[in-house]
Length: 194
Image (cartoon, rainbow, N blue to C red; front, top):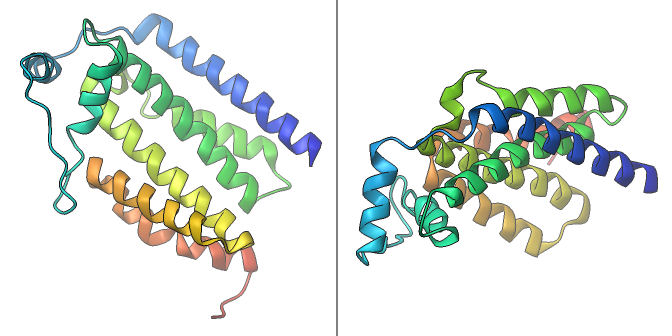
């Protein structure tokens, strides 16, 4: 157990180095028009509202969180993007470690590949922050679901639902992944049952 935590911490650190290696030459791209417009709206006091239903009901909360982190510049966007880059890679690593415990190297490699995919500078634009955060939340929900399967804790299941709702309320591309996650239980148990 101790070596597992140590290896996970090592992989987390290495993934952070990969993100930094990508970010330094490419990450500080000036935003296109949408972040500038949103930034002006937030400075004028136009705060986004949250609805519990509808597609992308949390869509504007990510840029607003970025604005709150750094109201005078776009460093908040960069911080959220860096967090999203790192989280999606590390969470995929943790999920694959549960699915393929004997194959740590493959899990780490898949996590690094998810960090750099797609391999162009389009992943650094400010609008992509929504994609990174949405995918990270869906992967977090998937990982929590795997832990819930082991521990049967109601709080964990509530966190799974909240993360899934937040993910698809930011960016709906996680819907197919949400439908596939229960199949992970079949994979882990190597059988179909109730």
